[in-house]
Length: 468
Image (tube, rainbow, N blue to C red; front, side):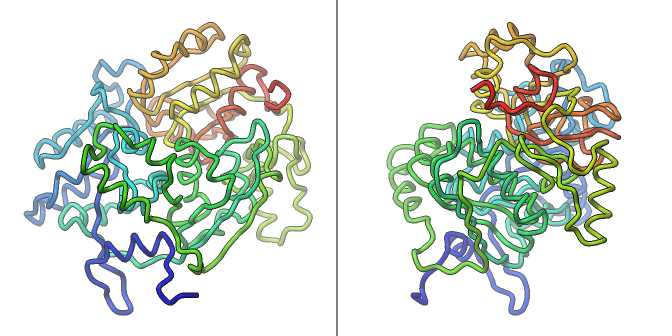
């Protein structure tokens, strides 16, 4: 191995180190700071108490997403706390001259959806946000991770952050994916194999032919879910798929600047003899459409599989396993196929992009929504919503009995009006199935848009391959 050999992660990280603290964290320069209404107010307050301004407001982009309603956005927000948080974000952005894409702005949407679709997210960047699923942006060959409120304040004040350098992990998925298997299934499969703590302390680089076969939307879904394995983030080396996606977008480089940046981006890849701290190899042929049965994303099986019996678990793991199944109302060894479903949610920063709605719509075309299903179809941004309408998907959805809502985080988390009622079962394309995540007592089964579509038209957990 060459002493100069570096991973993609090393190349980007090292290029952004302002100062290395011996036996301590690095002072890391941040190219893009994304903010929303939930984690920014306290950080702005800290700045004011110290008499500071945002150091580089032009590098900060804001949008409200967690608290916003997905119906009636033209009217004032009904929930007092949600309205206050959104209003506070608006006031802070005006005060500090930060670019805000507020409700009803053409660029409004979930922060991790609008960054890529506007060309704000680019290869080789360091990107942070007060939100764990910032890892989404790693799909472009960037180092992107979530930060806490005190760190948000730190970036506001200095455009830098104190951060220890994570270890590096490579997850290689080779082979051809079966029909009906998506990036979401790859993510849930990997987490089911390495556990929700398997990536702890690491940044993951995803490689292999199955990864390269994914669209940018699929790559974003996979990197988005990296955090659910305990990893600090995930990334994929940029290639022609990446460059084609970025080209021509609102804030992408243009003209000579594009050619210059493109040449630099093409160098962003791990050296052949670079060494990772840990590695995993998976065969794409082993991956089926996935569904979770428990209360963390690692508790997942193929849709045609059974819930584990737990017989081979240690005492501590068995206790957690049993507690999770009790919450879900499931039993060891149960088949997942045929489990009842009350709600279906497609959306979130995981699966709220145009490709996700195309897949869902294609599946339900010519079918009808099951009578027992309440479906929330929530685009990740106004641009996604506009594209859905432009492509005529709305008419197909409405013919099948579905309605399109307005952009927002929606039922991904119980922080707005879209909450799953207690005891009800939801097949959700979001990223977390923790107790109460989608509402107090809500029972969440994570799945892909195709799996969600199958549940929506049958009223139960169904193998979508039966229809393909």
